[in-house]
Every structure is written in structure tokens, then in C-alpha cells.
Length: 285
Image (cartoon, rainbow, N blue to C red):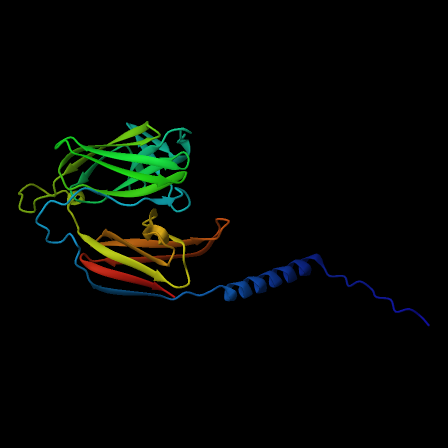
């Protein structure tokens, strides 16, 4: 009885490549269909800030720190004196904490800001430990002090000072001081002034934004390309992040969630114009 012999099928190389491309496209289409689809919806309602209508001078406030990695969505540049450096040129001393003032995507040691507006402060910790942050008002001679236990890396804090004048900020770790910051606060522009107004110094008010999701938790929030908040900002990973932003402007809010390896598994962008004294809720299903 003769044996059944199988002869190999000869496929031209061009046809084989075409077949592989078709298979790859089918796999990509299947994987795209398998990705979870999210629905987004906005709601808005009038918002009355706790600070609206306050007659007495508010105390200086410094928010709780939010840890972040200054890469990926934001690529800051460093303004040191008259020198502008790339972030990659920053050499962090292994034993010293560092302070920066963030203005959009530029970090510096000096800023002229509007009285009563939020100022972003970046603090770098070379390792886990306790750090003391001191704020000294040159005008009044008052001193404020905050203590934090922070992990190694970069952290974002928001400072709000109500008194016009010059401030000095310094951080100390294990009795070892880091660099100092200088902040000049100028009064809000008087709309009745006959002199031309600088549109960059006019306060546009604030709006409240809350992000809620039952499915996406442990995410970071970027505002106009810069890290701004996170799900864990209130101390718990619950899918809820709340923050205020400058109003009467169009902003892009980016939401980024990573897995334990640091890979982005969920990311979305939402561009919207926000009106002052309004509360917005972004619901992610």
C-alpha cells in the first residue's frame, strides 16, 4: 500500500506578504473592538466659592502635595537667572531638596503674580523623608511653616497669598536648606484706571471642575499639557478628582491612567470653555 505524500504549497513572496498584512489588519481591528469604550458627559451648575464675598483678609494657604513625574505630557524648561535650560540638563543634588515656581511649562526661581491667585510650587525630594517649607513676607514680616512627609521625586503644591508685596520661600530637609524662591505679588488691576490694562494681569475668576468615574481610578489630570491634579489628591483612590481653574478661558483637560508597569492604559482629552463661578462635572462611564 503506497504512502500518502504531502507536497509543500509554494506561495509567491509578494502574495505571502499581502496575506500577512491582511491578517495583521484583522487582528488590529479585533483588538480595537475589544478595547473598552468610554462615554463622557458634562454637567454644569452655578458655583459659589467659599471665598466669594469675604470681607476680611484670607490667610495664606498651601495645598497638600501631589506627586508626579515631570515627563510624558509636560516637558518643562528651566529659567535660572538669564539662562534658559532644557529639563534634561537639570542635575538634582542627591542630598538637597529643591523648589521651583511653575508658570505654564516654564520653571523658575522668581515670578511676579497677581494677588490672591494660585501659584504652582514644585518641590523635589532626593529621597523619602520630612521636609519643612517656610514662607516669609518681606512686607509684613510674617512667617508661615508647613511640614510634609514626601516620597522621593517631584511634588506639586499650590500657594495662595493675599497680601501684596515680596515673599521668600525656602525648604529644609534634615536641617539642610535648599534653594530659595522669590515671589512678588502685585494688586489686581483697577478697571477704573485710565491707563491701558495689561490683559495678562486681569483676574478672570475661577471655575470648579469635578471628574468622576466608577471604572477609571488612580488617574492623573493634566491641564493644558501640564500636570495639575490626580485621583489621589484627596487622599483616596476613588475615581474622583476636584480642582479649580481660571475661568472665561478654553482649557484642555487630559486624563491619564497607568498600570503598575507605568504603561498608559486609559487616556482621554476634553477641550471646553469654562465660565467663571460655574461648577462643572465630567462623568466618565
